[in-house]
Length: 119
Image 1 (cartoon, rainbow, N blue to C red):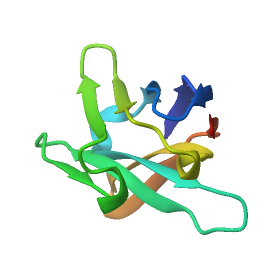
Image 2: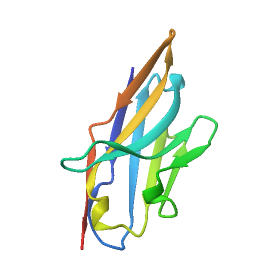
Image 3: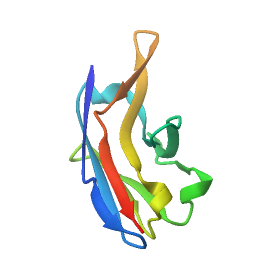
């Protein structure tokens, strides 16, 4: 089992920046990717960015050039730095992790953190 806890959400003005943190605990050695998703009211949850165990990163088109995902292996934390925030970035942001265990693909989610961007 892996537990994920997000930190860093809040209210920010358009054009501002925010850094989200995801702290992982438990069987973290089984994880091979960690990502950030978001879900706005009435919309489906969507991928924002992810980082693989290899260090490879992947970004959704709507955040390319505005977001950076990174990790601190010593702290077991993954970060999402978002700049030039827009009102349409308002959503609950979720940390997600996935990995293999005894032949089964497991997925884990944090509880989410609210990001509100005011115009």
